[in-house]
Image (cartoon, rainbow, N blue to C red; front, side, top):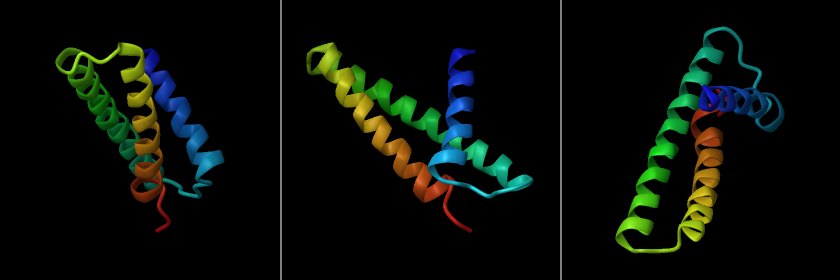
Length: 88
């Protein structure tokens, strides 16, 4: 439930304040679906990255999480800009 609320809030703020989307109707549904799908995708990348770096490579968990968060943040921005909120 917390993840759902966090991603919903992120969608609304990114849509309005970061990417200034003027989409209406079905286009908003397309944007929100893409936004949630990309967040699931980057969440999976985070899990795989953490598993590989901590369990396989035996890196420090804090360092791995910092790197993973940075990668996810940049990837989320790029996916949002290029795929989700691109101008039509």
